[in-house]
Amino acid sequence: MNNPSRLDILESQSIYIIREAYWRYKGGLALLWSMGKDSTAMVHLARKAFLGDPPISVVHIDTGYKFKEIYAFRDRYAKEWNLNLSVVKNQDAMSRGVSCEGDRFSCCTALKTEALAQAINLYHWQALLVAIRRDEHTIRAKERYFSSRDKDSRWDYQHQGVELWGEYFRTQLQPGTHARVHPLLGWRELDVWEYVLREKLPVVSLYLAKHKQRYRSIGCECCCQTVSSAADTVAKIVKELRVTRLAERSGRVQDKEREYMMQKLRSLGYM
Picture 1: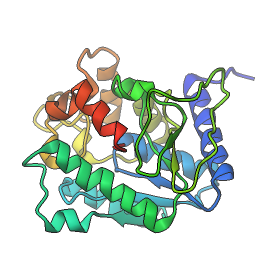
Picture 2: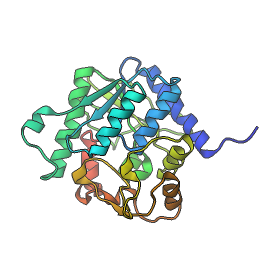
Picture 3: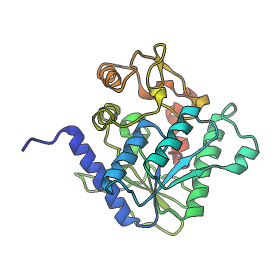
Picture 4: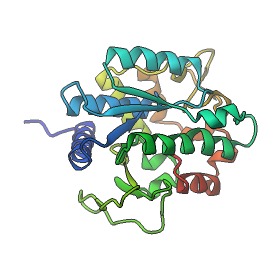
């Protein structure tokens, strides 16, 4: 029998974590789907974990500022994959005119963090599957596979349980709190793209180069910029990533990506 590949091991580990989260938080588990490559891979893993029909809610935090390609991708594959999709918006903040054209910290807090907190209270979710990876950002590298949030969705990054040798820390939740579960935490950007290629997963067309420009990371249109690239297929993206020195989130607006700003955002409940 052939030895399992790195992707086989990562896939098996992630499916185990998803199933473990479902068992532990049965009836109160949801999956955050941004339509980015990572969360789309996580949706695929959840479908594999439950034989094509994941018994959990799939949630899109809609700021109203996403690329039109993201909305089209969401609507197509939510229907094609028969997902139990919930679209969450902070209608109050939107009515007040909160916009990413102003203070981006306030925008992210209101349209993402607060919108999610409102949904957690409305739907009584106990845990969320989130597709962050340690190699994305130094602040996300501090995370655990099972990570608790308090009743205000805040993350106490200074006091976390130890996770060693595949033993995942599972805190006992207090009333009104929830957990974040990160099945892709140990994946690299290259791993995700190699997995997309192997599994023939669809991705938002923004990732593929046009006129030698493409998006390396996608989200709100006002917060993303293209990078120079000729990679117009997934195979070419994989090849490019094996040699590039450019940071994955270099195309994101930098005031939000600075370490102190990202740590502040995540401590308040940002994804």
